[in-house]
Length: 272
Ligand SMILES: Nc1ncnc2c1ncn2[C@@H]1O[C@H](COP(=O)(O)OP(=O)(O)OP(=O)(O)O)[C@@H](O)[C@H]1O
Ligand SMILES: [Mg+2]
Image 1 (cartoon, rainbow, N blue to C red):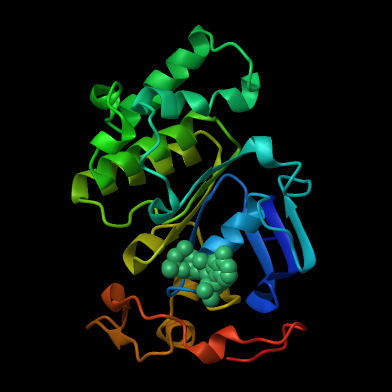
Image 2 (image 1 turned 90 degrees about the vertical axis):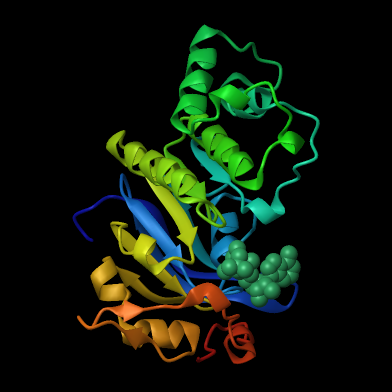
């Protein structure tokens, strides 16, 4: 990892809600120009970590450097596609308007959207196969279509760092493939992508993996991180292995992190 420049570098990053530690003191390194998967059970801190990287949640302790600066200063170069469950789908805006909004990051709120912006928006709509839905309102889309629109919005920002919170959740195969293709195309374009997932096989395709359980349990190449032992530590369950000895994670149960994992003291010395 030393040889690869880092897009995100965190040391002793600690994140809290009120007096409750949601993410205990952990070091983080996310390689630039690569795809990083963040995996862990419900409540393990995936969204909380993305919020911090996106500059939306201050650190309770530690240091977090994003694109060579602090998360807040990196915000215009970071694009964040929220977890679908957190998005208001009743906004009275069309698909094209949603994707066009991303261009105001460069143009400013009163900026003028010019032809190059429109071309960027068109390309993003096409890549996620939602161009034909451009005039529809968000509320007139299926959940999967809406998710593709938000990923298109994320792409159209042309940000150096793309954060995707569960972009593959509850999607059919076609939508999943479109989004996976978009993720790896972003990597080909030199961007850094961080995507949270509950899918072990998707995480295994990433260049780098962060396994969370109220903090970082393991970090590194997929083969090093996604071992039965690490997964058992993170999920608190026995991990079944297939004939080849590869871990199989039945996360359909979406096991919440055990309460024991969540109550860490503020010094981050909590153990799981
Ligand atoms: N706004 C909030 N206020 C208080 N606690 C919160 C808030 N958001 C999350 N938490 C708590 O912080 C912890 C981490 O939550 P987070 O949303 O980061 O988990 P996650 O890994 O993204 O889970 P999921 O897979 O369900 O999306 C959980 O214990 C959760 O209950
Ligand atoms: Mg989440």
